Image: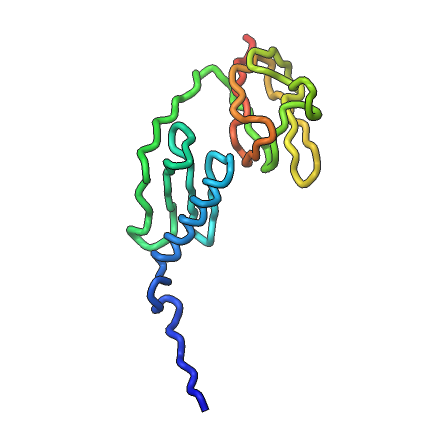
Length: 172
């Protein structure tokens, strides 16, 4: 009769301590980011939030890695590259943000003219784009009358809740 070998508890096994799990999670997120067009990926597990983002130029080879809140002291990973300081938009521009997670479309159908371009004059309530979420096409409308100064996403790109889509200079 063979005797079964008792397994050590998960935290006691070599390579499975809390720090190793964090490192494995960050490596997985980096791999996901490398295989996508997203600018960043954030994952929350319990009280710990993991976030990976492309550094400055968007190169997949340079990442900023961060672990926030929760986790044992000293477990935060140091940035792999110093992030470029974000350039603040001119203070008079109004940011129009995504109200949901989904896929951004700049036109009503493939091949059609986009709803707006940089320099387009828009009025309050005018459709700016579509965000597809769960196979539902949601029209995103302008909150302000003004001129579109920046479009910050590409067509068919995934967007997150609260991500800035447009910057509009309001008409005075």
